[in-house]
View: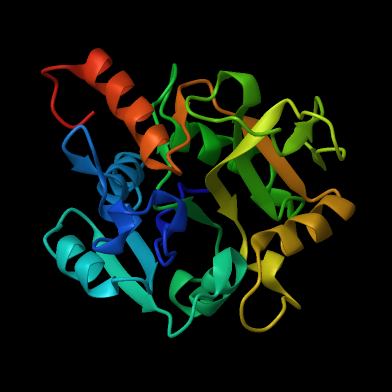
Length: 248
């Protein structure tokens, strides 16, 4: 099995919690240490060998189109949305552009640093070794320690068993892992998916019931950048770590 060459970047949202910064620019174009969030995500995809990226857009979409038109290191296509389709609906709407094989999906505002190895290459190896070859895996999520995430104050999202199988966080409890917004999905996950707008969580729950949703724990840093205050946490960390080093 070869490395995954196609990815989708979710960039259509309004970024409400990031106001007032998102009143005049889409959240994916907000910068951390001089580079936009979406460029940082696409940089990681390119480093992992991805050759084609599909970007869904809605809020202030022309700014994203204009900005990404300047990149020539990989092929970028757009999946415009007349209305917000949420995460699941956004991917479903673009499926015809993503091909028949597994693909990466990343939130445009995901911000992570590699650990001991390239995180996306690690994710790809987990998929190839454990999932796509024998049709046993519909999705592979990159998760991160809930208590070690920068700027995050939530309860986490998932439990992960020794085999990598995912379970939902019990109500009113803290889960060990949060979802980073980075994943590999297979088109078969979308068979029988709802029409229109819906969350990927609908499909995750179905895959969990069938023991077809897995996770890999990220071993590098991950940043929650939902608000201006959380953005400042990420900016300060990156400034201290990479002062004088361009575009890490």
